[in-house]
Image (tube, rainbow, N blue to C red):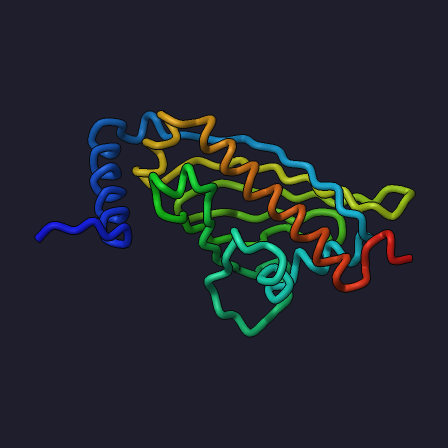
Length: 193
């Protein structure tokens, strides 16, 4: 039986690539990424921090970071866990399905810093730093220190590193724009007073 259904073809192709990557690449060539992203959000720090540590708010402003857990506790704080299905840029999505990550908030200084241990298709640490300037604009810096554990994603990363960087930048840009719009819609942007 032959099929051209992308819902069938993609997972099968990803699985075959993953097996090939595991055989050919092995653990010695696991791809690692140390990436920094900076956001400038025209809203006060408390509002930005609240929007970034609320499951409900995250669902509203960052569609590429799809929350997949159903925890009754909306607030994300030290000890909280959250799981995401990360939808990548179209050029990567054609090669591999969305990847999954699970984050545990291990070190939290409210309105200053979040540190998360990341597991799943990526493993490592994400540190997020917050600062507000004298104009009431919030600056958020993300430092990702991760390695790829999914063999298919790892292989793609070796042959298409710039594509992955472009995809990462697109997801992060969408987050910055989404959070800025969310704050403006809710009357908490710098321009609202």
